[in-house]
Image (cartoon, rainbow, N blue to C red; front, side):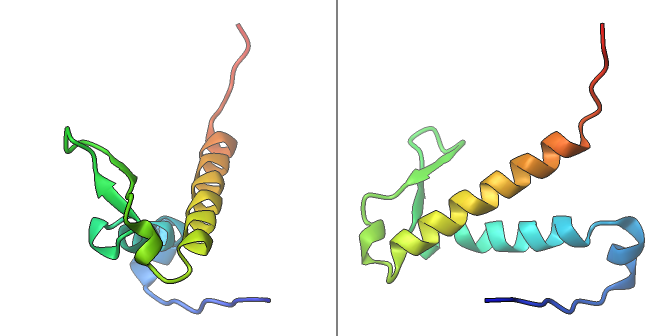
Length: 86
């Protein structure tokens, strides 16, 4: 399956933030406690999988997608780091 996204917002294209906004919008929806997959931890500083997530249709596919998204973000962060020798 191939997905194509067409998005136009000149300020994002010029600043290079299109990818950043794409990931931000998806993460905002996917990790929102109201969606049902995740809940706030007791300290209210982080999220964790919700024990009630199984009531969300196709919840396992959403968790797989969330993992793939996080892996992609981490990969992009690692690729953009500049390492130096000591």
